[in-house]
Amino acid sequence: MAPASTLTAHLRQAFNDRWGRVSESEVESWRHSLTALAGVVETAGVERAGVGVEVKLPLTDRRIDASFVAQDGTGRPHVVLVELKQWESASPSLNPDNVLMGGCEHLHPSVQAAAYAAYLRESHSAFTEHQYQLSPCAFLHNMPAEVGHALKGVEFAGPLREAPLFVREDAPALANLLSESLQGGDGMALLPGLIQGRYSPSKELIVSIKRSLEGSPVWKLLDEQLVAYNIVRGLVERAAQTGEKAVVMVVGGPGTGKSVIAVHLLVALSAHGRYRVCHATGSKAFTTNLRAICPPGGAAVFRYFNSFRHKDTKPNEVDALVCDEAHRIRETSNDRFTKKALRSEISQVRELIRAARVSVFLLDERQNVRSDEIGSMTAIEEGARLEGIAPEGKAFHRIDLQAQFRCNGCAPYIEWVDQFLFEAPEKPGGWLAAGEYDFRLYLSPQTMETALHTEIAKGNTGRLVAGFCWPWSDPARGESLPKDVKIGDWERPWNEKSPEQCRPPRPAPRPGQHPYYLWATQEKGIGEVGCIYSAQGFEFDYCGVILGNDFVWRNGVGWVATRDASKDPAILRRKLDPATLKALLGHTYRVLLTRGLKGTFIYSTDFETREFLRSLLAAPPGPAPAVGGRGSSAEL
Image 1 (tube, rainbow, N blue to C red):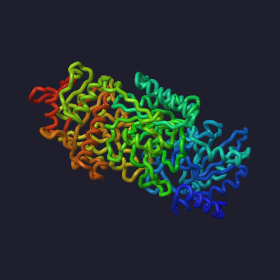
Image 2: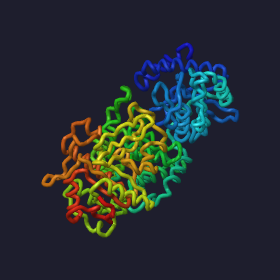
Image 3: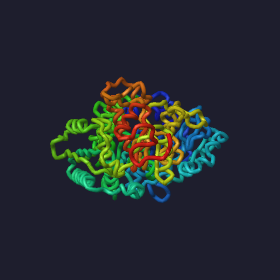
Image 4: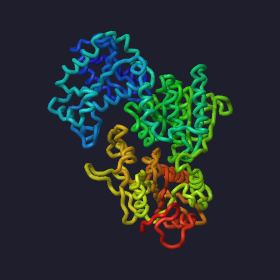
């Protein structure tokens, strides 16, 4: 069909019917790449294999170019996944796992194919329930051997072992791989298991996730955490028997253990393959962290809210959907890249409720930091009502969390931060004098940084964070990060951007190599400043927080939010009313002021705000190195 172009015509029609109008460039890609692949298949002798083209990975919009399935020589079902590229030339990049093609950064094709294979092995029922085997590879049918040699270097040895790369002259070797893997035939009988397979996380992945996370003492559930955990387990068990849907709302401030409950639910409900469970958030930093500390394939269970668009997700696709950081839910999952045929007419909350028998929303209404983040108790109640689940009924539950597991377990500190940012600021209570939490004001960024390094030298973790009040520049190729954060003669760089945010954008790296994760976990991150987008979802023993001029205190007025002092594109792109701007910036600094497990150091770039803080902390008049907490001997 491919050489006669009838396969391309079939694909165009099927694609348009299912996902909206296909671009002409993609049609041309099919025509050339599938014809080249057909030539290989013709010599491979795999007439009894089943073929899938543009097969979608579960719960994603990613598609596999070509998939062949048949029995192998031992009688087991075997899938060969082929990633097709029309590239004629490419070269290694300075960035790990990437290559340069046409001057742009791309994933190495073997890295891409291997990632798809890892995802399928850990999330697709054909591989997790029916023992299909899987061999990924990449075929660059236009690339001559002398050019392809550069993509087979030692730096790509790992991905190449997992997913061999074939160039134009390697067509016979690709034919041999197909022939050896698919020699047993019976492909058309096995093809539905691949095409119609469902999301089903593997038992081994869940065990590995549990092993990766349970080493920390915060893994233990206590009191109302256990109550919430048990309610959700009971609802999921009943839903499996009766088909009745339910919604659970778990509400709590920073450090009340919402994410611990979320991960416990994921592991417990998925154990032994009993239920299909997904964890979802709207935070790149948080999701990247979870994927990075878990084994390969973790992306299968750690998803984003917009992974569940209702036109692309079957109702009740999963038994339980755990929506962590639900305050970051958007109004809609549509964005500028959403195809017309997939654009949703319902809210993101409703999509999430539709996607699962039991939907669990863990939220803190004072942690949304962008104007398009609308996750709230009211929004969830309204979404449930529109999906036929009455908030007053037995299928809707709300649990409030009070216990504090962060900030040294000092709940009064969290209360003081809320009072400080949103109500009538007052002097700290006895918690400060008693040393229950180490909170210090510094009168210069230099002394605050010195104090932070002192704590790090004792074996603690620590990072500097700041309001988004300085530009975040892209470094020139091969050069160090620009020192954008400038306060007097003190200069430091922001942490490295996520590659997708750079100009031009680059492919996202593997989670363990993501700049946000490296900033939070590697020593080099100590000298860099994190902002709300890189810091949310992480925590450290000590956190130094710089309040910028976007949020300042004025005596007789209170907190004043200034849009012009911000460099945050999410703030600058929108005309926000003063109350909304003030609330969002207050939420931002609340998140930053609650990242520290043992202590928080604070400095404001605004003199009047610093003096106001000094008055709250009962500091004596005149210069002082630090006020509050345990003090510091560092000089200004």
